[in-house]
Image 1 (cartoon, rainbow, N blue to C red):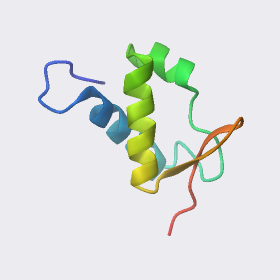
Image 2: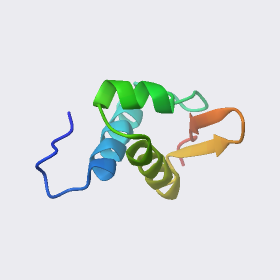
Image 3: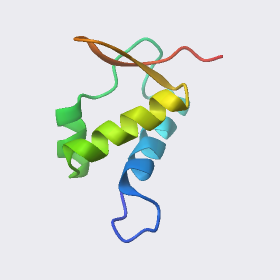
Length: 77
């Protein structure tokens, strides 16, 4: 879960949690990650936090976004 008292920003914590799910195979390549609304509800964070987390995951090469379709787990390697 996310720790609001941690010195690590919430969006980084959220990105790390999603990255862990990708690494563990809970989120599969070429399949969508949970929607912004689902992530907001599950983790109790705002829209900005979710968007920053997804942007960080894109920077890390773990996900890609298709306009009007959603964000998907990237293929490994």
